[in-house]
Amino acid sequence: MLIFFLLAPLVLQSLEATDLRLAPPPREVSGLLAAPIDIQRLRANLVFDCEAKTASVESTLEFLSSDSGFPVFDLRQSLIKATLNQKPWPLEKLRLHDFGRQTGELRILESLLPSGVLHQLDLEYALRKPKAPQAKDILWEEGALEFDFWFTDLLPGRYLGQWFSSNLIFDAHPFDLEIQILHAKTPHRLVTNASVTKLGNHHWKLSFPADFTAFSPMVVILPESKVKVESRTIRAGKKKIEVEVVRRNEVPTSTKNLLDRAEKAVKDFSKSMGPWPHGSQCKIFIWTGGRSMEYDGATTSSVGALRHELFHSWYGRGVKPASQNDAWWDEAFDVYFSDGMRLSAKQAEIPGQAVALFSDDPWNRITHPASYMLGSHVFGRLSFVFSAKKLHSWMAEFFQINQRKVVTTKDLENFLAKKGKSDDVHAIFSRYVYGKK
Ligand SMILES: [Zn+2]
Image (cartoon, rainbow, N blue to C red; front, side, top):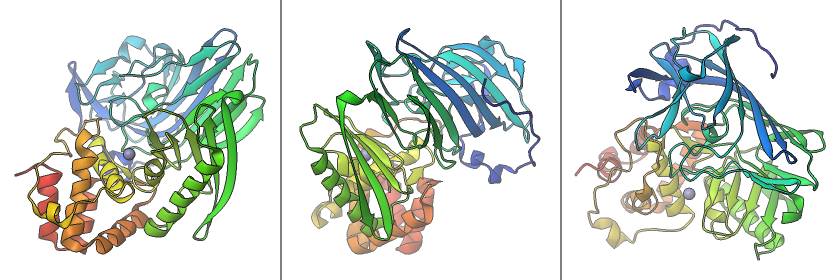
């Protein structure tokens, strides 16, 4: 077990004061009323054993319950043992339930828990391939391993809940993770956006900060021999940032070239949107292939997607969507702003297709696939109505006010409506975000 905490009565908090104000409402699933929780802290201890080719986890989840239903959270692993508030808890009252195609599975803790006090759920399990769509297993080799959190926005249940207890993305909380690799026959490298304390050889303590949500933390582990690593301290505005590039050997682009690209992107976006919001480090893992992913101040990326993924450290993982329904704007603005997919004035004048990028299901966990192209047109039309210069300065201001916070589509819409002619902003959102003709 990890550090043992007694149940500490908390000062009673109003709903408005907790992350639950952004949570979806309770809903009935398999005859059970499931209600979101507010995670206060997660601690986990992960041990990889390269000889036995097994990985094991002990974790402690501290959370507040809303008392309007059974607590719901995500974890796509097979449990061995559970303890709720220091008492053994039956695993059959902690099962995964299917919340439907847009949400995927979530775990329901079948106990009505009082609100206003901290609850503690201790879990033990073997870490294996997550029971989530297109998930990846740990890759075991002789005396070595490869591991990647492997998040995606495009499938439900593919964030932190694949590996550890986690919440929907409205909830920000600290996460302390101890990782140890036993019986490795070759040195391994850890690539992460956590603050890391080295506890020994192949033994680290990772601290992810309190503003991280389920899609924020990045962890990649692999043999040192499979990568080239180079770092550079850059100055972007008044900030000094240590940029680290870890690239797989099969990537033909040099680490110097990748650092040049990263430096240019970070400097450009610091100038246009505001200072780098993720402390003094930027972690970049480069691989070949078509898939890339953004994390807070970090990315696992192909060479071609690097600029797009780094822009997400401003929009997407700098200002963060409160739900997957809100996640359209981070792709849309990224494609519009950093990829340069801009509508011509003529295209913007033609009434385009009405599209609901924001679904009416508050439990939705899939970013709408049209968020990229049709979503970028939302910003194209706004820039046509108000001028690109004005829109960009408003988006920079919105970033600076809301960086490292969780925001909704309404927050963005109302902000823009205050800045510009509100009828025009609401009309654009109504047709191209909410899909109303
Ligand atoms: Zn993206």
